[in-house]
Structure formats: C-alpha cells, structure tokens
Length: 366
Image 1 (cartoon, rainbow, N blue to C red):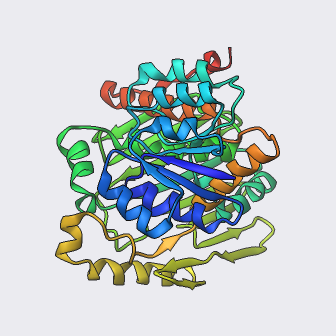
Image 2: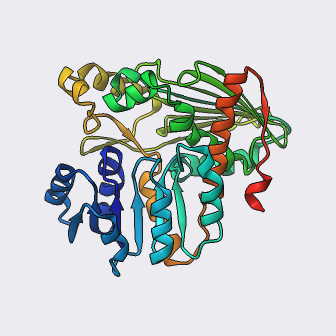
C-alpha cells in the first residue's frame, strides 16, 4: 500500500516515516512539507517517488491510498476535506485540533465518511497494553483504582514547544494528556462521567476521572521531572490484585490468588535491542540523560541516542493499513479522538473553575 506524508516535522520524520519504511506491506511514495530542507533530507534517506510543497499533489496521486497527516493541529479541516474529496484514507496525529469549536464539525464530517479515518493515539497498540487490557478484564472485581504517571523534563523540549507551553500558556493537558484519556477509555471500554483537574493548568497537574462501573482514575501529568527517570507508569488495583506497567518495558501482575505474572518487552538504544527489566531500563535512561550535550539541548533534538520503548507507533500504522486493506472499522476513530479532546478541554475548564465538572458525550453519537 502506497503512503503519502503531509507535514514531515520532527515527530513524523523520527517515528512514522521510519516505521512505514520498515513495514514491507507499505511503500513510502511521497513527502509533502513547506520546509525544503526537511524534504531534501528525507529524500536523501528514503528515496520516495517524489517530494512536494503542495499537498494537492498527494491527494491527486492515483497511486496513494493512505495519507499520514503530521501537520500542526490548527490545520486539519482542509486536509480532511481534501481526503474526502479525493477518496484518500486518512491518519491524523493527535490531538484533533487546538480550537475546540472545530471538534463538532470534524465529527460531523468524518463520523460516517466513506473513507477510513484514524487519530494517532498509539498507546493502545503497544504490546504491553495489549497484554494488560484482557488481564484487567479478567481480574476486575468490584471497584478499580487506576494511576497513570506521565511526567517528562520541560527543559529538554525544542524551543518552539517550550515557548508554546511555558511562555504562551498552551496546556499539556491538550498536547499530551489526551493520550492518557484515550488509553484509559480504551482500557475500560467506557468514557468518564466527571473530571477534576488541580495544579498549574498548562503543565504539572493531577487529574481525577470518574468512570462507570466503580472505576476511578488519577493521572499525574507534567514536565517537572528528570528525563533520567522513565516517563510513564501505570498501576491498576482491583479485586485484591495489582497490575503494573513500567514504561512499556515490563508488566507485572500480583494476583489475588497469589500467582505472579511478569513479562518483559524489548526496547532499543540506537541500533541495539535489549530485553531488560524496568530497573535496568531506568539505569539506561540515567546514562543517556547525563550524556546529553549542550549542543543537543540547543538544537532540541537528541532522540536518536535515547532509549526507545515500544509505545505502539509501528503497530498503529500497521493496524490502519489492515483497516483499509480488509475494510475493518477504525479502532481509534473521529468520535474517540473527539472524546479524548473534549475531556482535555473540560479538564482545563475544571482547573480554571477549581471544581469538578460533569461530562456528556451523547451528542457525538447523534
């Protein structure tokens, strides 16, 4: 299946493009970006059939079936419109948009569209999460409390992102915590009824979610930690059992019947693959963090050397290819993308108001 990329910045160039290139069921056909230097660099590495600065070339190409959109979220509706017009299946990175007033038009446009559409929430496609969900369903008895930690190091961000969040007040609840809203919705097969956010608003927050079936989730999110410590941690407690997901490298289940399940997931450093436990991975993170140079921090790019875990990015593109090839329903469709986005928007409102807020998603299905 031939793929065209629109918006080839750092994340797409460092994640989606190499993953597509490594998939023998996908063919990287074309790159589109407004930055000629980015296009030249990608052309020299991946040798696509062509590069272009005009996205119309991608949509008018009869050989392209699948379009991956990595533009900024404030430029998505024109791309959705062109995908519909030209019958191209469309994958867009999260979040859906910056402007909450665009959510409803997007849902109306894409919910019953004749093309396949997917939002880039990758964590449900990670091998660790694919193991945790059925285990949680098996072990759940009565109430459940879930903790998700996602905390990074702001001073390592690229300058444009740092300025957007720290100086301009854009919220990481919108930029990043939408990921966690989505994974919790997927994990519980439900959506939250109430949200309460406390903290700093644009970054460093504690968010509580009330779900049906006696499930409560707490998200600790921010960027006041050290990148020398792993960024993510999941803990599920239910029926006198505990499931721990340690940064996508180790899953441990301490079960009520006193049986223990432990599984290790590979991670990579450069071109090498490792199968170590969570503690060893933490040591590798610290080694990498202490080796980052001043030049790398100034450039805002140091990802090639950092320990990389499998958060499902490769698998989500392969899942979307399969969705197109086999005419399957999209697992992360526009409605689920909108629910994660709306939860983030309401969480920001909760922080501003200093009070919990109820959520109703029923209109998204009308």
